[in-house]
Image 1 (tube, rainbow, N blue to C red):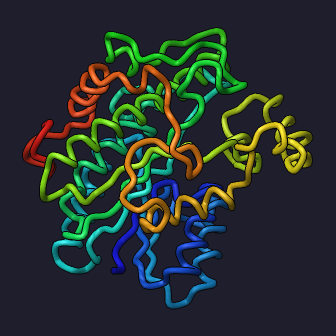
Image 2 (tube, rainbow, N blue to C red; image 1 turned 180 degrees about the vertical axis):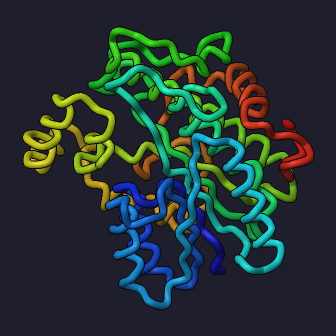
Amino acid sequence: MAGTIIITGANGSLAGNTVQHLLTNTPDNTLVLTVRNTSDEDPNTKKLRATIAKFPNAKVSIRQLDLANLTAVHEFADTVAAEAADKKLPSLAAIVCNAYYWNMVRDPELSDEGYEKSIHINHISHAALVLRLLGSFGPEGGRVVLFTSDAHEDGKNGLQKYPPALPDGLDALLKAVPESDKQGRGFLNYANSKLAILMWTYALNRYLEKDEALSKITAIAIDPGSLVDSRALRTNTPPLVQWVQKLVLQPFRPVLRFVDPYIRTAADAGVDVAELALNQALPGERGYLKLLKRESSSKDSLDEVKQEKLWAKTLEWAKITKENTLLESGV
């Protein structure tokens, strides 16, 4: 049954390919695509609009949403929920939490709420969006697709200098402390946000399964692989990372795949994400995937006590209450 699919950061490398696949293969769905800048002054939004233009009958809207502003996230959720309730939008079929932020070249930056931007954009705002919109899914349920990374586990990513770990005092994640090692500490902020996303996904699934009205909604945290052509490697990254992408990763990708089978293109990953959003890939599956394979995540990520502490803190950070989410247990 056709429904509405929300994709954040929809003008990104992976998301653009997800949109292309959805429009080509399931044109009956309605796509709500969020970007920070909706004008064609942003070349990535212009490219997204050109993709959509190839499908003149597509039911698509591009909407402005700055995930670094929690008030804007709640207002966007109010708007979508109202449109779904008034049948201006079909019930939700999926939320794809694709937008991301990292910064390995400058001092840490703060969001509008004063939170460190990586944890705010990658985790807190997406958690708020999902929890606010659970009531807009139809009775047949749907999918929440979140994004983690091999960065969540110590020793798995070549950019890591410091092991990812959520501090006992979780509010420390919100602090943006200037460091001399901008690359190392910036990547740590990103890695910790990806660990938080994964741990929160495990907790979210537990609460969804306990709630009869929402039990058909399944949440996946996917590591989409090492995307050698991703714009991410050219955004807020040191020159060396950009040169490695240009001179090594992209030209030698076919050979490198023999060494690392998780090296792939954004187009490959975009197809996976589209099929997860449609519940065509691994229907009913929950939890962590590396590509479309069920694998075990890090030991820390599986600690249910830590998951519950993070869950409670996320509700606080994201300003989620019993009054603004349909989820009954855990709030």
